[in-house]
Image 1: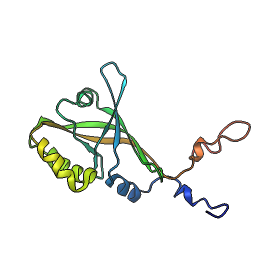
Image 2: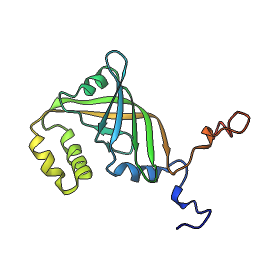
Image 3: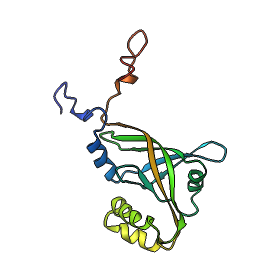
Image 4: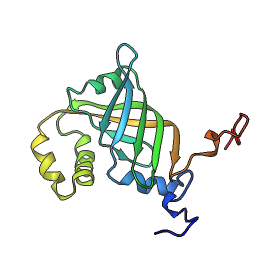
Length: 170
């Protein structure tokens, strides 16, 4: 049992420092990618990703509807999070089309690294039989990035008794 007043279960509270964000993004957390369909409705899909220090690589299958959405309108948003320490990265991005569906393109090396990161030693066994399937390659370039960690509300969300907020700039 934790001593009274022990708040260690909350973890480190606040924004992720750059190095913390880099470590978090190198782990195998799924990204939820939101784009806009032809009618302007949000379309959200969980995807594997790879952070390169400047943006995220995503590799849709040739027939993935969300690839066409990104091709038509590059505005998108992403969310990567975890249970436990509650680390999260949320970003608005612009999708840059690097490769249309192809075999053996630049996407292969990225897919190989992703397969190992997400599936461990079985990653290559999963990927190898699918290398004959065409894929797109997009780079999601962040316009705005927000991060958070720990089990606590950011100050900007807290209201004071009688109305208002604690500090809207925090």
